[in-house]
Image 1: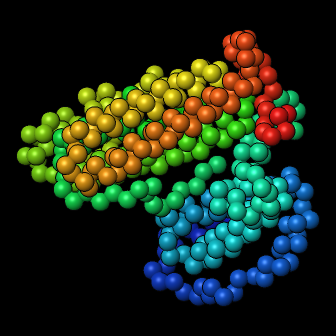
Image 2: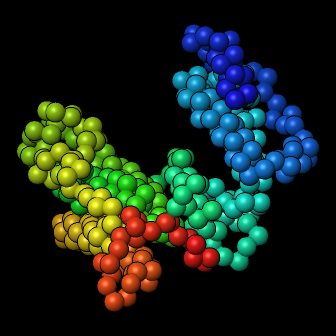
Length: 132
Length: 208
């Protein structure tokens, strides 16, 4: 879990008393190019891509709590934006290849049926009982 | 996994507080046929449905019920915000105020705390879907009872009417889910086996 390690390091670098009242330095136009990222995502297997989504989503879930109590921490804010962008891209890539994971991805599926209920639920056993 | 959307499913803007109505409507927050009961029932039952289409429906309705839970809480919050001590004492909200001030706590109109004994997970799709259809009708009746009291107050009645209409839609969808399940059972004896216990999970349209 690379993202978790990064986050632990970052949390250590951000003691609780660090609180910036003003936004300093965040530049929204510096988002990384997504073309290369997409080809990496498209070369992953379904399990790898889902694992990647779990990693970046956990990074978002965790930094979100940190930002709730430190809303003006620029470093955390930049990290959150980066992770949210990675998560959105991965959700999109997953949806196009394997079916939607969220309702906002259902428009990306190249299918003429409602894929939302076709994919297995996360609690379905893969070895017995489940559809695959 | 869930994510929160920072909006109400239907807008609520109540300008006049009313302690008595807050106490009545609170029943749909934590009462026997309330929204948290509905959500917990569906989100728990979906694991033993044996059919992915029905699991999907229970997931999506259970999720919408959480949004209704938030709507009812918003109504209670707006109806109790800014009440005077005199209004609280006169209205009968006094005992609630002593324990919860004007925080939003899941209880029935008569003060009975939320209790999971009000819902059931039987682990049998036929039984559970019948419970779900009954639950939607019970909630619809409760909203009808509330509407008789608030019908001349549009800022309260409008969101209540929306919630009531959703109960009717959910009832319809559960009826369709019951039909889907029955189609997979032995038509000469629907009770010959339990789809969720005796059969592997199936998914449309492959039928596997």
